[in-house]
Image (cartoon, rainbow, N blue to C red; front, side, top):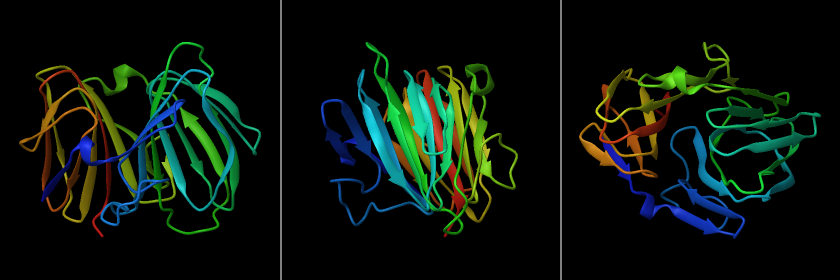
Length: 234
């Protein structure tokens, strides 16, 4: 079963310094039919304008993954971590018992765009953890790259939930096929470009729920950048 989520049906917010598209209910956007997809609770497509950002604020009992699309994000937290990440980089937090952090676009002229994903952890009150990993375009160009896995998985970034997150950047006319196990489901995001996914056309910003399918077939109708989260079919 395939369910296309048109970007026009998603929640949106514009605070001036921050523009957001909400895939699921978040902040002032509330839709009882769009609360989560499996263990994926939040997926926000954020644009933070130059010199804007989130001041220190708390999180707990959530696995948080950010994927940088454009610009630079500067992170600081209550563990003493401080760093700046760029396109293709991933940061992750096990908020667990509680962490306070800030996220800013310190650039004076370039906007920051990132996807932020909140994933329910396998259990609450986990020890707090923060980390990041720098990926390159070459690692994902015309192929799938697993950027996040469970703690038992094989990705450099590991979180406390049975999920895998893949990304790819495809040239126009290129295609990929991903085999889906019988007990798994996928949430797919068209980050940039246009692609045909299992015969459905997705424009940039659109998403797709993939349930009870055997294959994920992706064809780049134009230069394409994509991300999908594979998880247990609950």
